[in-house]
Image (cartoon, rainbow over all chains, first blue to last red; front, side, top):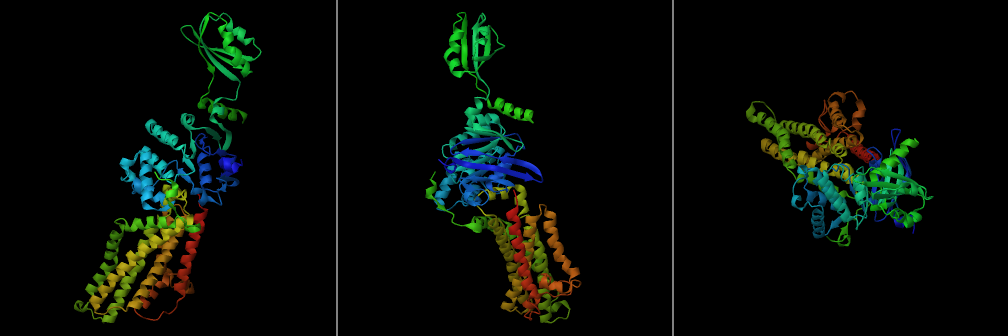
Length: 322
Length: 270
């Protein structure tokens, strides 16, 4: 299949310079269809700049970008017909109610019939849990309510692509939970491209991740691949009982590269065994440990990294290289 | 919820994309709120209130010997100054934040993330504000002025010249509305956006005698300024126009300002 069929967003060498400062440097980003794509990076990494370039709110200094195979500079209006966008700090006309805001937004896409538009607005308000506040002016809304209204207006046209800029950054844990839940509900209908610096949110809902730092893309991969780590395969093993030289025996195996014992209590020990041959480890590692009859294995599994570890490792590596 | 196939898509294309929705919104900011009648009351006091005071103190009972024609000319002049000059100041003040406020607050970026063209955004503001200000400051007030003058002097102004005079006032106001709109796309602070047009408007009081023939390509000659009675007054009183050049020049300037506003806004980043 061609890139146009499989990729929703495709950028090539996308660069943006503000007064001589590189906000974005030669970004090559590929967002697959039907993914929840987490666009990760510290503040000032260039996430919002990228989003503005994609939406035609800013012009690239060099490079190109396409959405649905359409050029973001020349075909911006056509692209925006199929996109929903939530800004980092969403602003609306404060005197309007939530329903009026959604009506105003819907009229950029649909001219009628009025009944269908009103039904869509009602359904969208329900989706984001604002049906009881639908007819109140926005100026009285809390941060969480504004964010939910933001998601509502972004998806009023059932977009093929939702672009959310830090959708949960300003929210308390409950608000964040609500927003992530709405995103999960929408994932079956649309591709979601969202920027954030909250790693736990990304790990919870994303299937693909890109990490941006100081305007440069430093990693892009499916989240499972990223969480598996790029170092040697490591197993974590919980052991209870007398060790009797098991650690030394394992260390002498040709496919074991390291055995690290971690502190435990009440006769428990935790090992991290790094291996160079995954197949041999799967086949023999547990059996070899159990050969020692005085031991009980309380835990055995391949070590999973969390996104924070991966992020810090990648960002740290980058810093070290420079 | 209904699927997208249940809807009629908006079929505006090119620069018109989003225009009708934006125009409806801009119109609602005038006619869907108290703003329209509050402004009518304000301009009633300023334009017709002043005219009423003048007519009350210059009638046959006032002891000041004047002919009905003199009173008519004087009353027309007073209205032209109040509605034509101070009305224009009001229009500039009304327009000053129309672009800047939306750029600063982020609502412009929000709207432009939807399928709406940038020309539609600017033109909707121009059309809605120019229409509302013309109706509120000029049409409604001049209708009341017409009745006032007819009642006080016993002579109604001839309708044709009267309408032509108001049309010249509207053109004068349009010049300043488009100038303010253009400055709103260039600057990011209100100061120059409101200061430059008002400064230019009042500069006519001092500069009209100095600039010579340049005055013919300015809007200054349309309304009373300095020693000039103003083309709008002459037209309204049924006198022949000494020149049409300022009328054409003002119209051309308004088109140029609108063009620059569209060009500048097209290049803006949000």
